[in-house]
Amino acid sequence: MPAIRPAREALIGRFIRLEPFRPEHLAGLWTALGRPEVFAGGYGGGPEGLPPDETAFREWAPNYFPHTRGNTYVAIVQGGPHDGVVVGASSLADFDEVKEHAHIGWTGWDPRVWGTQVNPEAKLLMLGLAFDHGYGRVKLQADDLKKDHPRPKASDTQQEVPPEEDQSVAVQEYSFNPLQAEKEVRVGNFYFKKG
Image 1 (cartoon, rainbow, N blue to C red):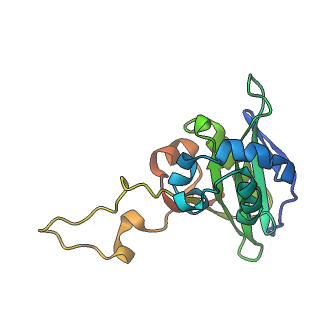
Image 2 (image 1 turned 180 degrees about the vertical axis):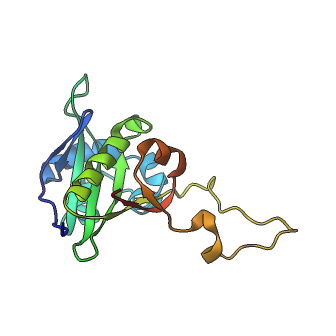
C-alpha cells in the first residue's frame, strides 16, 4: 500500500481523544503547557522557549506546532471528572510518501498527566494512523535536557568509544510493543516499523 497523508480528523481512544489543532484550543493548551516544568525537559526549545504569558503563547504555539506540514493533535480527556479538559498536544508530521516515513514529536503534556495513560495512548493512536495509511517507518522523538541522563564515560582504564560506534546512542528500530518500549524508550530518536 503506498503511503497517503492522513486527513485531519479526530482520533478516539479509551482515555483521550486527539482533536486536530484549532485556535480555540489555545487557552486550554496554555493552561496545560504554559509551565516551567513542561519546558524544562526540552519542550518548545527548552526553558528559554517558555512564553512569558498567555498572549505570547497564543502567538508562539501556532508557529511551533507543525500543523501546516503535518497533523497536530490536542489531547482532551474523555470521561470521568475531567471530561473535556485539554491536557497537551502532539503531532504526526514530516510525511514522506515515497519513503513511507513520518515523525511523531512536538509533544507536551500537562504535568498532572505525566506517567498516566495519556502519552502511550496518544502515541498508539498516531502510530496506528500512520501504519494504516501506509507509513512503514515512524520516527518518535523524545527530548530531555535534564543533566541526570549523561552519556556514559569510559573509565580511565577503558578507551572511550567514539559516538558513531557507541551502541547506547545508535539508531534502533523497534516493532512497537508498548510494554517493552516503556522499559527501553526514554530519550532520543526512535524508529518504529509495522511488523
